[in-house]
Structures are given as C-alpha cells and as structure tokens.
Length: 118
Image (cartoon, rainbow, N blue to C red):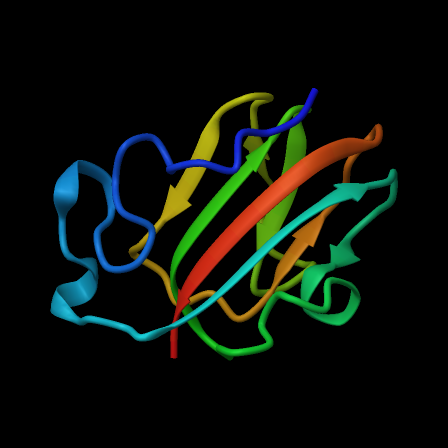
C-alpha cells in the first residue's frame, strides 16, 4: 500500500503542529523528509541508514511518522522505551527534542518521516 505523500492530516508541514499550534513558539526553516521501504530488523538507526534524515537538521523539534504497517520505534536512544505506531496512523511528537529514531519492524513496510528543527 502506497502512502499518500500529500498533507499530514490537514496541518501544514513546516511550522504548525496538530490543531494549528505553532511549534515551541519558534519558526524553523530547516527540515528533512524521507519516504522508503523499511525491512525487518532490530533498532535500525535512522540517522545512520536513511540519508535524507538528520541531514539538514541535527535536532528535530517536530517529528511526524507514518507507515502502512505497525512500526515499533524508540526516540534518541536504542535503550529508551518502545513506542508502537499503529499501521496507517500518524505519530507526531512536538514536545521532545529528537536527535535519532530507532525502529524494530517485524515486517517490511512503507515509511514516511518528516522532521523540522535546527
């Protein structure tokens, strides 16, 4: 199943979070965006393996992740607690500085990640 590369659930992709809230009262001009098929694995390091992520920015202030399969992730460290993103939903984080994402998918799936920050 292909992921729609259109808007992210109706809110702008650059400076507004869910419900039109401005991100941390800060406007950022840098972003990274990537779409790919991820295979199975454990603690796949996005910063090291996905060339379009954490390329323009080093610290994400807004993270949006979508996939067409259930995707377990950890933010910032492979030793942090697991967050499960259900298939065909959008995970949004705008209250934590994110410097890396680790995923442990049980099957191959399409993934789309959008980051903005500095």
